[in-house]
Image 1 (cartoon, rainbow, N blue to C red):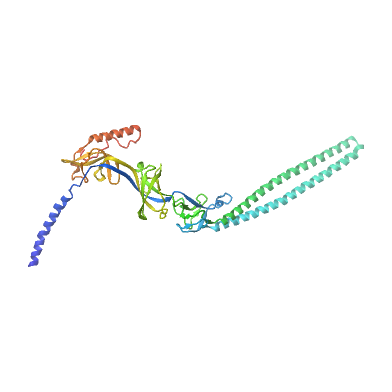
Image 2 (cartoon, rainbow, N blue to C red):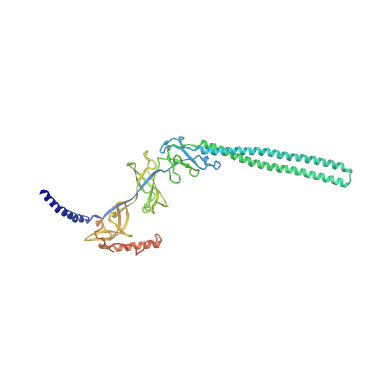
Length: 449
């Protein structure tokens, strides 16, 4: 009997509690959250994440002799590499390059050198034989001249026609001797030129073998100075490792950064980049050491942006110099950079949550006798607050959440709206902006207009 009574009471009480929850619970969501307009100094900062890099570093490169045109080794693989982050002294081992590639090229170069030496020796023999034949011709021509002269001398008592023929034979023999002598000189110059070309080819092939021997001896890479080894990246942004292929056009194996001069390399979005200038002070935090806080300054801002992966937005490279040095800092550590872009004194400011936007017009919900939508002219902002140039006064109360029926709220401050339109028109006339907004569009979708 008692159990039945309990069930009856629960059946009556539970529905009543549910109804009360929805009645009073629904009203709690309509409570107004407010803030007051303050006046004072506001500091505008831009926060970015970056990566530590050495401002100056020395590259560990392929042997320079490998880049010479005479060697003709166009790519070579890394077969061994010291662990990244190792601290080395000058002359200490860094890496080993593939000896097999150079051995194959060296073997081929030696075969070509031997072939060139054989060609030179054969050319010398051919030259000696050819010149010997020319000298024999000259000797025979001289003998023929002497014989013709003897015949001419013996024909002194012969008839004029016989004497004339003998004289002509002497002249003919002398001309042939002269031609043979000239032919010997020309052949000698020709053979000398051929020998010089073959000797030049022989010297080039010998030079290539000598250079390849130097390359073979230089395939063990050593540190040019003391430092910490940081792997380089190839043209695809992939870190160099064992098995990576290097070329004379991409010769960097690793770098030895100067750990006493560090920078934070960061990227700033195109919305904030106009605020960033060289010389601005920066507070730097290190993710690996949360207790450390360093100071720095902006040293360079890129003029050209680059697209973010899988996004239409662009970012700009900004380099920040880290003041001082710290033995705990290492390249590639992640940093948090708080860039101070400006301090604005004696300004009205409100929480960013109190400022709403419709199209290109910003407004606040101002609470006086009733809530109204007040158009405002905004200025600089940071992560928490926004400067208000016009539209409200110090001490005004603003809503941080929209009213229950924002479309029924009256909009005031149209003079500010008209001033904004005038500024836009002036900028269009001066050519500083494009025709992306017109007077009919701004504020078109504003509720309660």
